[in-house]
Length: 572
Image 1 (cartoon, rainbow, N blue to C red):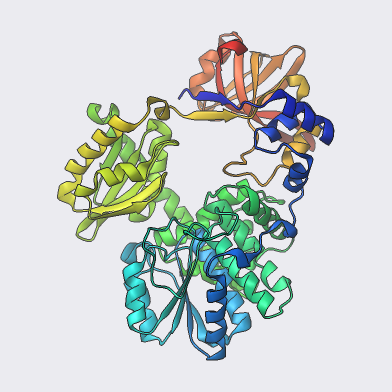
Image 2 (image 1 turned 90 degrees about the vertical axis):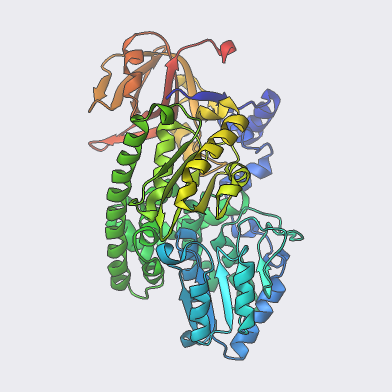
């Protein structure tokens, strides 16, 4: 699929000024300026994140109320239940909170609850509150959920159960009647950084509790590895405080990780030192698989295991769940693609809406994402859930999925989510009408450019700019993630240097030449570009810098993201 190239615009004066003051190559300065880093002090903080850069947690609205209520619960020997979501952010948040509470409270009076994805669905559930009622809990701390649970928080209050909500999802105008709500996005919260994940918010709460109780810093810093895993997996912006927390958490992962993280690293053969990217593609899917395929409680039990053998036991269960998940989502994706390819109407739509009653509820979101890889358009995958149909929606960058669903609400029993992803429930008889309405809304509102994937390029580079020193500086821009992705470079009008090969009818191994300089490159899943490479015509390539190690020798190589016919710079 041809991509739209968008090369970041940076003022040359700013680039040269930063290059001079930092004494770095202008290419590095151009990448930094494109990320809003224009001053020496900003660059220093960017390359050397420190704990001192974290904001005062007391700036978070209701923090004093949350701390006071927890201290009262400890003083009165109340039972505290930690309630979390079944994904990585939720389970790591629960693991962080329950371990810390068991340090400062009687461990026998602290427990946790994770809703079952299939039976209870997302967020605070009635079954979870009934569990609290039946077991005499008087305080529930929800992490990574709860901000929209107005009725259920009220239900708990009817039974004299208080709520403290630690969440990061966008609140509605009306908030639950909780003792305290910790959410930087809520109206009236002066906390400077708004993009924390759920585990990040929970980390802020235990930071303040540590301060009030005069505990050593290590008592809360020990959980930075869990925070880093949550930030990486939840796809929140890798900027500001998130980047600092991730940088410090990654350091702990590579030096002395949580038993559960270490067990998953071993099982997934993750090579040390781990990067955020490797965590996203190895650790996160295994933790998420527990909730997708079975019960996410075992993910928490793995994270809080006191001994490595116990953590390894649970990690093996997650590893098996992930194998099942991969097989299931692969099978469903093949079925879904076959349905689209066999239907001329579906192929030519602006949207994809598919329903099969036998599809596994736990993987429909993943399948929706896989369909977008081929048909790049807003996509909904539905399956049967009891008497109803439910499923997941995924958008393409730039298009507001939630607003589109809101415009189709007459056909939905319930829906929720945000700009890029959402979930919904409806009666099966309404699927066809909903599908038509969704197609109508999207086709009338989506800008045509959003139906072609965009490739954002940090800078145009000459091959003479590229060397190991450049690579090592780029490596120091880790951790990478949304809004701080690994720098993508473009080189224009390069030539095939010969000996290029098509591998397994899928990938291209090639040598590319600019002037007298030749670099090896690898282009995964780009067999459609092979005729272009063979043509001998000048090529424009977009890539990230990589290192290939063979027989103990390291060579710089280009991990190619796109290839197009070479054009003049003025035509870009």
